Amino acid sequence: MNYVLTPLEEEIKTMYLSFGIRRPDQIELYKIAEKLDIWIHIADYESQAIEREEGLFSIVLDIYKSEPEQWDDFGHELAHILYHSGNQLEMTETFSEFQEVKANNFALQFCVPTFMLIDSGLPPTWNEAVLFIMETFNVTQNSAQKKLIHFERQVIGFQFHESIWKDITRYEKEIVI
Image (cartoon, rainbow, N blue to C red):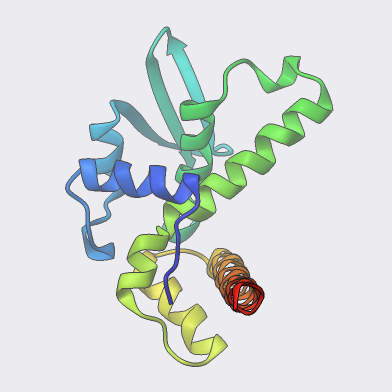
């Protein structure tokens, strides 16, 4: 299968490679934050991204969450730092929801980078694949399941595209003959 990364997946791959991170065992939240010049704070309130001064960013992670939950939150809050601006309390509800959807998608792709998932190889069954993703990328079961669903849909889409393209190519050859 020739999987083509989405633009977001490609951007995340470029980011990881620029940090010298090529394998899941090299992913470390604090090292990534350091490379991005983002301060990490652990506190007893909900995870959030904060810009204290122009260009001075922090991510607060909820002390009561597990390490996989904090990793998921880090990916989500990182999206807000990289792509969003403004205070969501001052935005329309629709725009705030839009930002949340985009941040959730980024976190899904960032916390389980597709290029690493492809290189890792997946076990043959759904449950084994979910467990593999959870253990390999240190994410929650919910995140592992969502990533696997997304990845399956992308693969099916590429297979469908390749099938259609073969049919079109065969049809064009028949017309020329």
